[in-house]
Image (cartoon, rainbow, N blue to C red; front, top):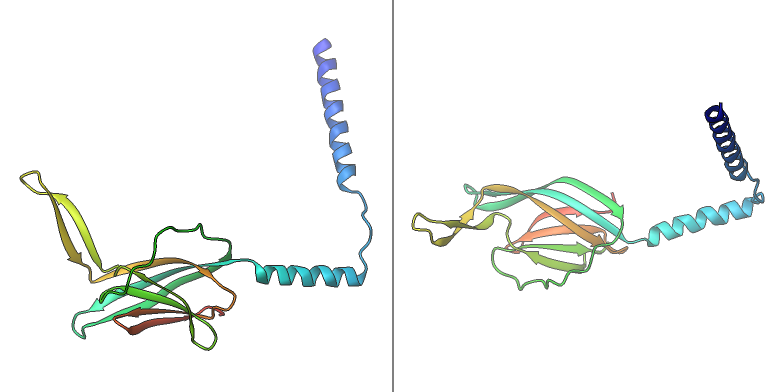
Amino acid sequence: MQKENAKRQFFNGLTLLVLILIFQSCKVSKLNTSNDIVNDITSNIVSEEKLPMLAFFTCSLAYDSIQQEYKMSLISKTVVTGKIKESIIDSKENKKRELRYSLLNEDSQVIFQKYMQCPLEKTIEYVDESGRLQKKDIKLDSTEVYLRIYLPLEAHYLSFYMQEKQLLLINLKN
């Protein structure tokens, strides 16, 4: 009998708590005027435009040995709001076989550029039969390139270059 009374009191208390929470959430706030609504919408649009933007790209890169040229195509593009953690790695100087990417403004002027090692060229380490550590350079026919980059508001295009030849131009505003 005491257990039933304790259960009943517990459920009554729980029901009372739920009702209080429901009434608190249903409070009527001050009605917005039409000007207040327009100002809220405008400020949300402006603040969204000023948020930092990130872009994630997946591209395919291949070397055509017959025509002796590099070919690149876009697989996917995703643009979201957010920030990239600061990197302490400096960009390298241009070397003959590095892949360069550049952000361009609407007049196709470079506003940012960076070099990355050619993704088709890899160095692997292995242990040979005598137990010594060896390195071997290999060249792939094709691979996928993944890029995560901060997009300034003035960036309109992303361009990829290899050996000073443009491989791919991506419109960032579409």
